[in-house]
Length: 365
Image 1 (cartoon, rainbow, N blue to C red):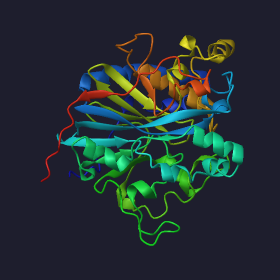
Image 2 (tube, one colour; image 1 turned 90 degrees about the vertical axis):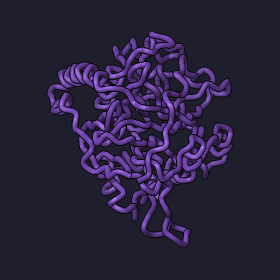
Image 3 (tube, rainbow, N blue to C red; image 1 turned 135 degrees about the horizontal axis):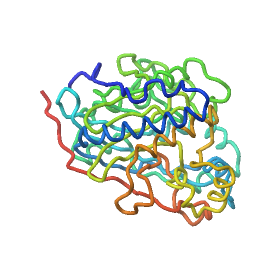
Image 4 (cartoon, rainbow, N blue to C red; image 1 turned 60 degrees about the vertical axis):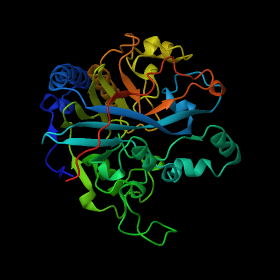
């Protein structure tokens, strides 16, 4: 495996845009920077291969999903978490493998919000009704012809409901266990924004409900690749700093034969980034009433204005869908599902899963 340290490159187009004042000028500075970077990013080349794999479907309060704009019959909807495997040429010329969003469901259940709803009968029954498991993250790579040792990078758009110890390993046992956890992907480093890591060091009450307590304890420092701002990982792959939902939120940006895709949890469906097309009752009307271009996933409100700007950044970077040009290619990392039981809060459109190129086995020198 090639050492990953120092291979990340900053993205100069976004330098200083998050400090622009007043806020309306900042939004336009972010939009303009994204337009400029989109053109340069596309010109650099495409990723080698992409696969998305469903991991699990979990319950989620409907009132959070579309900023309270939607008309909800049921208090819970379901959202599907998808893991993405991306192969690309690193800036050292070597093939790299990134695993994006390898959520371990057992760890997510320990986040305070989900832990609490399990203690209440009605919520528990609703939770079971809206849960479905598809794949374990550590089983996905073998199904694609790779081994878990082939992974260079792991990352999440943010660390809500993640017990990082269960993914990256820990040098001390988890509560109730007798031995330290081994990493799921032994050679991989966790790409984590410095501000996201800082949240675990000193958590604010407005952040607490969605982070697994002590979820970073004992994770070896040398398993982390800490970055600031916006960075490029290699040809056709970038991590865009998209603060607001959390301080260290970042979104995956990849260039493919169908153009640029962005994956993010700032929204719950394509409706979130383009409410003007939404058929979910209330979403289009409320967005028009307030004069807003996007509708937030609002379970946390660390900074809703920043989150709005970040969603503009995401949809400006994305290309139009080849399948339906009305929609920009932004996919939620946890997407509202199209199940009749949660009607009428069902997505107007879904991009589905991504499948590009041929997954290759890297050389093992």
